[in-house]
Image (cartoon, rainbow, N blue to C red):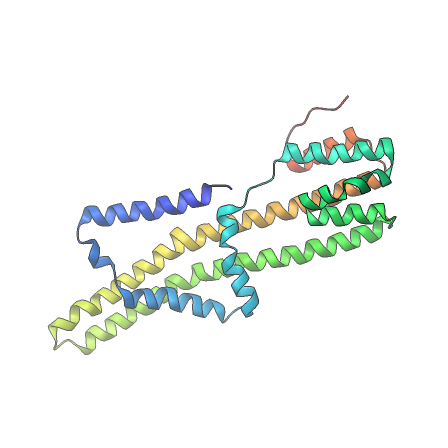
Length: 254
């Protein structure tokens, strides 16, 4: 788990909450109609722009923002170079006994090594892997788009709530008791929209972008490694190529 997103979002809401409490009258910032307008309206409008399945998956991807842990680049390079060394010494078929470990690490990696063991041509393996990577990238991109859309819609519905509150005020100018609730809806919905966009939806979408970019990078890394293994590239050369791709330094094996 990478706690950065959780710490940042909680801290943002905490700072806002502390400021409200210090200013006094925290109850004045609670308005149920405003929540319905901003939260309900934002999610409903976002749903209208995506297939239901994609929208639900995108909303549920919030788990990745909090629970996803980036792979260790050095450990990954060591793992892949060990595979290359094993193949260089014992041949491709030596990988079959450990195929479950490769699947446990990454399904795409397991699929590619299975195809290697089964004797498929490199071009077939690459075509299959690139298709899987493209599909994964599309899925992860949709998850990002859902949260980007929510980040756009929350402030927009905040403004809609403001207009609703102002209309209610104008229609009840003769009733002083109705002015307060109307003003509350007018102002608080804008506040809710700004908070939900800037302290919640935008950080989530940014984190999901990082998840997507990293996951796709590592999938290409696995493909690059499998291609090198199939061609019999020296494990040391493969290690250096992978380290350049990940921007880290690794020691050269003897």
